[in-house]
Picture 1 (cartoon, one colour):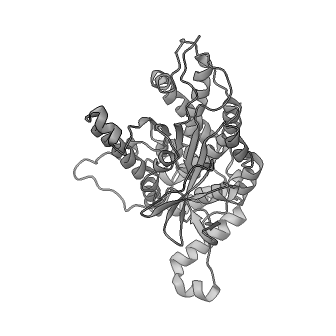
Picture 2 (cartoon, rainbow, N blue to C red):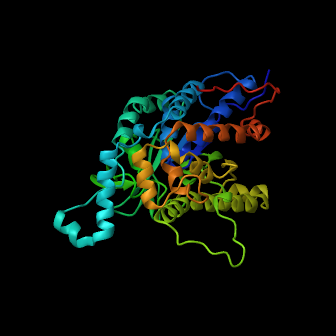
Picture 3 (cartoon, one colour):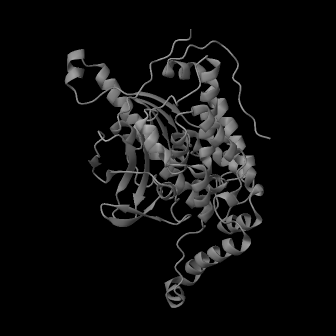
Length: 410
């Protein structure tokens, strides 16, 4: 019989943010489900007791939590959505609405505060994500989460968001009654239940999507993307009891552009280039720093005697981290032409040109089109299959060498 670890209550899945780039995470999950079957493990509950997510990763984590009693079915359901995505399922992309909002923004940029004050033009965001709210209501039945926690299929779910009012980064969580909230400098937690509004707040990319009002501490605050001011992306999982963390990011170190030869002249960066660079910093930097910090702690603990480790308030953490092996910016630049014409015009106004190197950063977060999302899912599957031995070691599965059977979506 294949050997497997007993059901671990300290194993966590951490999914970071990145808008449409989160399709990569779905590919990794597909490969994990296929590998579990190839290793002869029985289908059933998810191999993660703790699920945490930020931004689009929060939506993926919540959708997985809703099906924690049948991991394979949940992964297939999530993958089916991502494999057939169109931007109209996430934000209004018809010409009238896109141009209306775009015109308001351009009015503010070109004619200044005086005209905005006179006309009372105060657009809340560049795009309207009302379709995403409808999609979440239909496909993410969060009312199941408390039941799954009580039944023992799930230990905890946490999604993060950033308050525009208090400036605090908040981890909203559903867990058993024994789980105490936590507070740190500039970040805190708040007990659930998690709702679709929390997912909208966590995934509200700054300036692109509108803030979402959420109740907290007896009043209402407006929240935006959980990647903002997220100084410790792994902290919620650790506070919820994780000792073993599988982390799936949506950016890699190769996203940074290589140094240019001396004397190379570059044009002034467009608004799209600046916005894409800012978003990349929000979604990438904090995770890399947090992983590096944990690795330093693990090395320090390894130098202690067993007695010293027993007295230490710190615990070693097992980390397995996935990130795209290729640049998603470049992939997005190749797919810009698949966006609705209204979005292509809007991005062109901001300086984006299809297939031009360096122009894909902003588009990579908004490219909810199946040509792009399927490419990212395929990359996630490929990256996970390339690390098959590491995954088997992490989960305690015995690799029988069987081929992985992966679903394809026509």
